[in-house]
Each structure stands twice: as C-alpha cells, then as structure tokens.
Amino acid sequence: MPDLLIDPAKASLAEMKRVAKVVMHEIAHMWFGDLVTMEWWEGIWLNEAFATFMEVMCQDAFRPQWKVWVSFGAERDMALQIDGLHATRPIEFEVVSPDDTQGMFGRLTYEKGAGVLRMLEQYLGAETYRDGIRHYLVKHSYANTRNHRPLGRHRRGLRCTGPRRHEHVDPPGWLPARHVERRVHHPTPLRLRSDER
Ligand SMILES: [Zn+2]
Image (cartoon, rainbow, N blue to C red; front, side, top):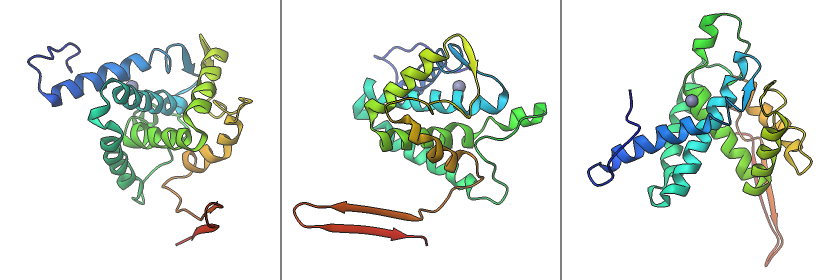
C-alpha cells in the first residue's frame, strides 16, 4: 500500500514524487471514473489513461522543477517497447471475459494511452483540449459513456481528434510517421518533409 501522507521535511525526493503521483492519479479518478464512468470494461483505458495524463500534468503544475513530462517520456517509451512486440494489443479491445478485463491493466493502457492523450493535447493546444474535456465531463456527468465517442463532438475543434485518436487506439502497435510537412513562410519559405521509412 503506497503512502498517501508524507512529511516534506523528512521525505526524500523520490518519496515526495511517489506520493504526489499516487495522490494526483487517484484524485483525477474522481472525474475520470467517478463523475463519468465508462459503460463497459473496454473503456477502462480512458479512465486510466486520463488519470495518468492528469497525474503528470498536476505534478508539473505542482513542482515544475521536477520536469515530470521528461520522465514520463521514458515511461511512455517503455510502453512502446512492449508495443513493438508481435504479441502487442490495441489500447482498446473487446472485453468479453474476466481475463480480458485483467489484460486491460498494463503499460499499454496507462502509459501508451496517456501518451496518446498528451499527443492530442499538443496537437490541439492546451486550451482547446481543456475546453473539450470540460465539455465532455459536463455532458456526461453522473452517467456512463461509450468510449468511442468521448471528446468527439465538441464544436471548438475536438471533432478532429476522432480520426487521429483512432489511428493510435484501434490498431495494435504504433504506426510509423507517413508524412510530415510543414511550411514556414518567414523569413524564408521552407518546407520540411518526412516520408514513410
Ligand atoms: Zn488509476
């Protein structure tokens, strides 16, 4: 059982980080899991991925000097190592038996899921993303929701996350970047392009 209270005057940095991580993760479940609950076990990844995402975000606000997004990158990479195996699974899959449910609780659910949510936040911008999550939580308060619909209908831009999200949530493993292009017009026109490996 992890500690939930700690004396900052006596605790080591590692202990402080561990307690902050656990407390912030579990508090996040008051919104992602309690206030809005998934209809079925296949949606558990959104509870856990969001709680993990919020846990890191809250730690970053609490102690920016910890640079927790950097350490999260290492945890996400561990999830992607698993995701590189032939036996990997999608983040979301059909849950029929109790064993399927158990299979949901692992790095692909927590860290890869949180990584996808972080990527969407970076893609949309923090404010748009926050507004979309707020809309989703208000709309589904004290109710159940189907996980393939969350965040998808918000008028301020989250509509576009649907296809992006499913590119990463539905298939097993991760997709290589197929095409990245960016044009910068000032001061000199520049185009960067990266094609499929
Ligand atoms: Zn959790």
